[in-house]
Structures are given as structure tokens and as C-alpha cells.
View 1 (cartoon, rainbow, N blue to C red):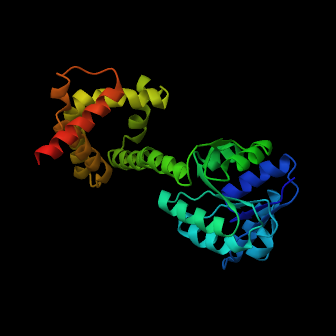
View 2: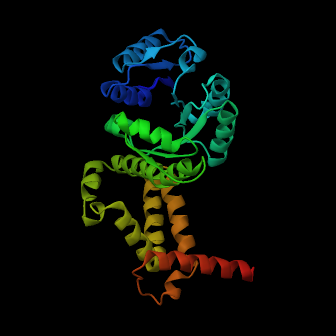
View 3: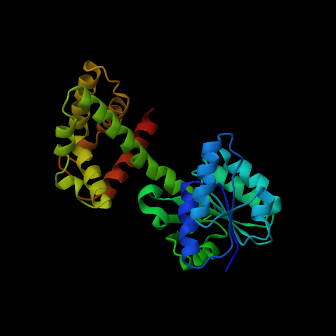
Length: 300
């Protein structure tokens, strides 16, 4: 079995390592920067040991002769870690970068790793480790993606290879986050305001209609087609929601931004373009937006 090294031994690393050791990976190591908080350091050691990770005293000790190096560090540290690890990598070692970096930064990290003789993998974590554990989907791109996928699947992980250069998986992750993380912010804004009115459970329980139970691709298609004719009305409603939030002392940051976006869609003239009739094909709507924007640019 391949030697596997983790840089960073947080929740993601421990979840993946536990699955790997359960399916036969015998040499699983890890390195994490020293912690000044002794309680945090002790907890980290205990979690790593429970996941089957042998902690190393240095980055060099962890990554030397490792077949796979998985950098499970925050985005702010990813480029620095790639730069430090690259010259220590074994020839053709697979370097898996799980940080949600911008595509250009993934390319920069890939060049650094390639300079050290490694095979770079741009890995996007498309789920929540806390609930899905090692079965969290990993979307991967880059020169080492196929080799990593073959190893990872054999070790019990859920890996999909996306054709394209490093940065393609990150691009999917970041665009997906417009909805996933934007949704989180919107839910919190709604709940804080509803709590100020003393009706948070009533509001939450009211959101369980048919529209909330359809697969997301179907929901996205439905939204696009509806906004082609109803964006203006929905902008007005959301603007009134923002006023209600402000009247109760809450700052409607997300609501006002969303109302502004819906107003922008309405002012493109989609409703007039479709004669007030709701289209059935979301691609037709998106093409119409492109055409209306081009027309606006030509006339300016």
C-alpha cells in the first residue's frame, strides 16, 4: 500500500485517514504546525491517533518518500505549504491540494509542485465533512487527478475526475459556493429577523413546500424560467422584506443585495422579450440575457 502523508491534521484529514486505514493503508503520517495552546495540541494528537495518523516532528519527515501528500490546510496557507513541500516530495509523488483557492492560485501551486517533481491534484471538497465524513465527494482535476482517483477509490473515498487543468475543480467549488454559502448567509439573516419578531419556528416550518423538495437541478431550472417574467415582482417583495428587517433592528445585507440583483434582471427587459409568457427552457432564458446585455453594450 502507498505511504500517505497529510499536511494539516484537522477534521478533513482525520476523516480521510480513518477511512484509508480501515481499508488497509498501513503507512499514514501527518504533520501540523506546532500549537501554542496545549489543550488544542493534545486534542489534535488524540484525534490524529484515533484516525491512524502517525504524527511527525517535521514537514520533511512527513512527506519524504510518501506516494501521496494531501495538503488539508486553509486557503490562506495553501500556497506557502505547497512552496515548502515541493522540494521535499519524492519523484512523481501525488500532491493533493484541498484548499478552496482561486483557479489562478491553483495553477501557481501546480507549477510549484511540478518544479519539485510532483503530480498536482486540484481537489474540491463538495460537501460537509462533519456530516459525510470520508464519503464527502471530492472533485479533482490536474495532472495527478487520475492516478489519485485510482488510489483513493481503492481506499474507500468518493473521488470524481474532472477533465481540465488545475483550477477547474476549484472553479466548480467557488461558483457552487455562491449558492451554498450565500444560502447560509440568507438563512441566518432570515432567522435573526424572525427571532426578533418571536416567530422563528413558524417561519422555518413554513418553508417545506413542493419547491423545497425537488432536486436542485430541477429547482434551478424552475427559478431561471420564473425570473424571466417575475423578477420585478420578486424584487419588490424582497425589498419589502428588507424594510421589515430594518424596522426590527436587523441589517438586511443579503436581502437588499438579492433585491438589487432581481431588479437588475427585471430591468434587462426579459419580461417584454418573452411577451409576459413564462419560458420552459432555462437555456433560452440565459441566451436571452446574453443577447440583451450585448444589445445594451452596443447602445452605450
